Amino acid sequence: MFVIDNAWYAVLDARELRERPVAARRFGLELVFWRTGGGVAAAVDECPHRRAKLSPGRVRDGCIECPFHGFRFDGAGACTAIPAHPDRPIPKAMALRSIEAREAHGLIWVWTGRGEAGDAPIPFFDFDGWSWAGSQLAVPVNAHYTRTIENQLDFTHLPFVHRTTIGRSLPPVMDVVTEVEGDRIRAYLRDQPDGAFLELLGPNVWRLKTGPTWQFLAFAPIDEEHMLYYVRTYQRMVTVPGLAWLFGALTRFTGKIILDQDTPLVESQPPGEARLRNGELLVPSDGPIIAYRRWREERRVEVPWGRAELVPPERLVAAK
Ligand code: FES
Ligand SMILES: [Fe+2]
Image 1 (tube, rainbow, N blue to C red):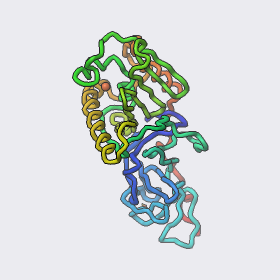
Image 2 (spheres, protein in one colour):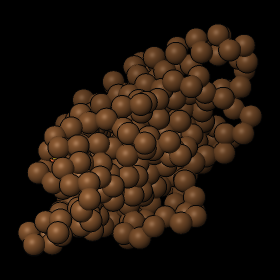
Image 3 (tube, rainbow, N blue to C red):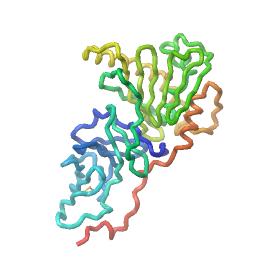
Image 4 (cartoon, protein in one colour):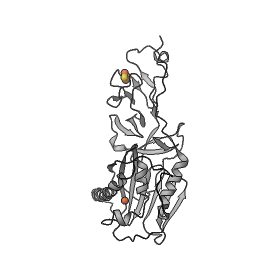
């Protein structure tokens, strides 16, 4: 699967990750996530010893312990214990395909670069003064995540797909303005510069300003034909905690109704990643989609944790 190079991707709801390791399919790979004490860790969910899944294992001293023979691996993927041979040195090759991970804004993020993330910032919006209920909805779709991003950059589907909801009062004639600034793609209608506008912050978070709320989406890539939305609403009208929670629950519910109107259309498009030249005939009102495809085309690379290198067996056997 292809991803944006050197990017922080939102991939998991941070609340899902507690004391136990969590298994999740992301980027076409089975991954495992766990809490190390000081932070979060992620790796391909396969023990380098005999290739069993690590995710049914447990967390001990911040390390994940394989449920098969008890080998332990730290947050950077290094093996810290081989219980059968406590006195032998541990071969370097006995390591996980580990993935740099962080927790921020109620989400778990992973770094797609081949090198370290260093101080590369997590891409997120400035929601200063706005709050969300702290719980978000997960909505699965049978489509590549790029298709769902494009769907959320598309103004002209509103009066058709959403004619009974958010598109009710919108005319079909639309002059869409697209602005690109670094990893940010912003779009609005020329005759409504102060009206609704939407914004994608690459690689995979999005928001839409409508009236007194922000709708927020994260697009978690599962594989070539599946993705998962994380849906939130930000508001600043209701400040009483219980009421704010109720407001959040209600708006998430409406958000789900609107996504459910989109899903059959998105799932009816050809499967797989949306590419710049894919036989579709785009028109001027598809400006934000064209901008997104161009942005993506320059940055896409094969996912870096794909294949395990075949390590010669003599390097794997613990030295005497
Ligand atoms: S397969 Fe994991 S310790 Fe043996
Ligand atoms: Fe839609």
